[in-house]
Length: 501
Image (cartoon, rainbow, N blue to C red):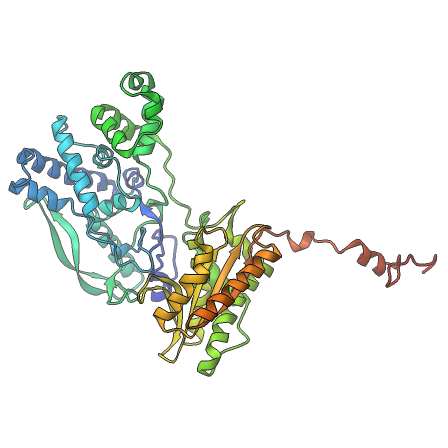
C-alpha cells in the first residue's frame, strides 16, 4: 500500500514528494548532487549543512592526530555512524524497510578517508564523496544513507508540512539521528510527530522525500572517477601505472589513485557539478522500480477470480488460480510488455514484485494473508499464502535463465514448503525465449515438479509463463486457407471452388 492510499490523499501540484510503497523498500536512492543543484529555499542550505557536518568531522580527526584512543577520534567515529534510514522505505533491503545493519562499513571507510584527507593537508571538503573515493567506494545505498541521516531534520520538517497540508494524522516517535549537535559533536535523538507506517512489524515513522532527489544509481563512484582520470590525465598516469594493470584495477588501486592525486579527485567531483543530473523518472519508470504496485493492481482488475476457496482443502486450488490469472495476463492481455524494458527482459526481482502486487489485491479481497519473502527457517521463500493455521501454500518464481533454476524446483521449493508447514506449492517458471518455451523444456519442468512432489511434504504444481515478446493483435492475420474459405475461393477440404461460387 502506498502512503497516499493509506492516508486517503489526493495529490495536488504542490505535492512533489515520492509516494512511497510502505511494506517494502523501493530501490531508489537520494543523490546528493540533485540536492546540491536545488534552488528551492528549503533545500538551498542543505549543501552547506552537509559541508558543516564534515568540517566538524575533519576538525575532530585533526585534533585526534590519528590517535584512535583519543576522545576526538571517538566523537568523529560516532558522527560517521550512519544507520540505514528505514523511515524513507528506500534502498536495498529486501522484504521490508527495517534496515540492514549499523552502517559500520561506511563509518570505517569514511573515517579512514577523513584521516587520509587530513594527512594530505585537506582541511575542508566540498563533497562528502571524496572520503568515499579515498577508500575505494561503498555500497550504492550507503551514500544515500549518509545524506538522509545528515539532512534528516530537513526531511522531518518537509514531511510534517505535507501532513499538515493534507490533514494526515501523526504520532510522536523518538527518532534516531533526528539532528546533529555541532557544539557537542554528537547525534541527537528527538521526539517528533510523524505519520505511521503500520506494515513493518511494530509501528515506525514515515519520512517523505521529493521525487526530484531520487536516482537509481548514485553519480559519484570510484569506477567513474577512474575513467575520468584516464581520460583527463592519461599520459601522466601512464608514468605511474602499467597500462595493462591499470585496465584491471581493483577498488584499492582506485582508492590509491585518489589519495595520490587529491587535486584530481576534487576536479572530478567539481566536474560532476556541471553535469546535467537527472532524477529517476518516477512517472515514466523505465526500470519498473516504482509503478509495479499499480501495474499489478491493473492485472488483478482485468482478471477477476472465478474461484474462491471456502474450505481448507480448496485452498491450494485457489492459490493456483491466482498464479494462472497472473499467467493469463502476461500471455494473453499484453502483460508481457511489463516484463520487458524495450528489448531486454526484466530481472527476477521485478517479475516477483509484479506478481506480489497482483496477488496482494486478490488476497485482500478474500481475507488471505500474503507474506513476501517469508523466512521460517532455511532461506526465504518468495511467497507464502495462508488462512490461519489450517491452510498454507507457497509460491516460488524463477526465470528459466536463472543458474539455480533446476535446484529451485528439486530442492528449494520442497524445502520451503516443509519449513512453512505448507500442504501445497506452486513453482512458476518464466520463459523469455523460444528455446525456453521448447516443448521438451516445458516437459522437463513438469517432470521435475513431479519428482519433487514425490520426495517432498507437499504436492508441487508447475506453471510455465510464456513471457516472450508478442505481436500486437491488431497486426495478426488469419491463415490464407481460412481467408480463402471465407471468401468462397475454396471449400472445407481446401479444394478450389467452382466459378461463380
